Image (cartoon, rainbow, N blue to C red; front, side, top):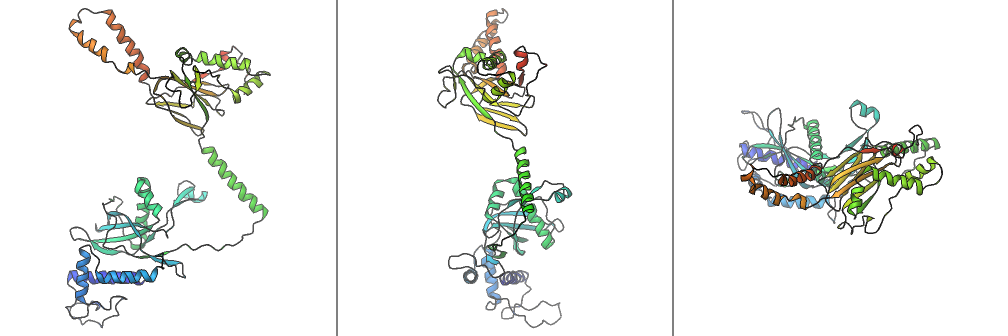
Length: 480
């Protein structure tokens, strides 16, 4: 490729100018090197674009590049180069072979070293829209079993350019590789450390395969977007629009394809945790708030609904409650949370329907800092809610017959959290501790009794209510 050859030849001439192994001014700088004492061979043809440059001009261009500037001669050549490979709107021109010459956008730089010779390596992670984005792809079961991996993987397209020589801050020689990714790939790597690790390891693997460099996986990310004076051009494969071709399938092939798609969808659906149906109620009455903290009171409500809201035999009644059980509301006493009635609430009651759960031993219920409630049944259900008020004293019950989880939370009392006065009274009475006063011990006992429930922010124990036992029925008859 002409541009790669031009850049390689220019870098070779620059290196020769550094080491002094170039002819003197006025002589031809592009003679093939020979061993000392042997005559030089005739000059070979210069690469395209370097015919008009002399030795002095090449040295001056190198000095300009080392200062971080673009030589005027190369800038003019770059402009001509862009006109050759881009259209009037500045978009890359795709040739007949499906390729295009592009100048990518800088992203970030990876610095590492070669394990064999300890030389420094810089890798420019650039991006351009012509490179396809990363995507998930399915892996056949046989291949997944061979490599001990899952049946889905991530495909990350890239384009690796040629190696070029450069120098670090101290002037020591280093090698630089340019890799082009899709913009989404670079953006994902900049915010996801795990994805960036996989992306860098993939780049190292490609460099090893193409250039034989054994790179150290202990890399760093310098504070720079690109290593080099100018962003190098590359020729990449551009994805052409596919030709539409009708594929004829038999009825049997269509049926098998549909069955595989449905089976895959059922498998994904089975592994997906669903959000259960739930209702959040505000309890305004203090007496009722204490009642809802009792399993006996909840059992009483279920029994009343069983006796009064259903018809038919026991099986019919339980089947009806399983689908239609609801708590009766009363204005300014017990109301469903509507975003405005939380200020008057003494407590909260969360009712969660878990129809696929016959017993409550797998339920995990967490009250996080009194501000969030998290309920999870692994592989079945997950629910996370932000609470409208700060709560404590969390109690949970699960009724196996109607398959409802009741989570009662009391509004956190702000006064109980500020023990300013009791602390001051204790400090004042310290000199007279020889005469114990029973009246001073009572407030301390009350504070400890209130503090115990506040320390339990994480609760995993769910109390199961078997309504057969609460209703006094024999356990021999079970309702599914």
